Length: 27
Image 1 (tube, helix red, strand yellow):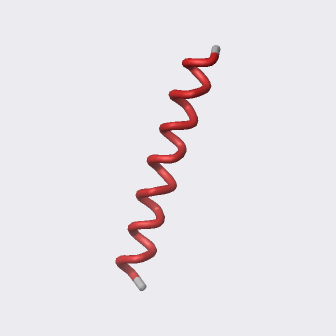
Image 2: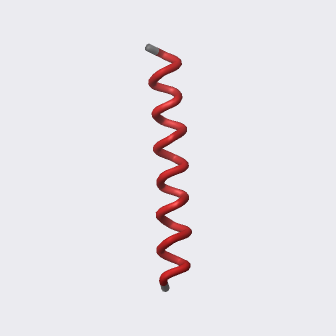
């Protein structure tokens, strides 16, 4: 459970970074 939660948190951070990159790229 702990490992799964940590993995999901890491994925969420990666997705957030990708969104920021896409936004700055589009803008």
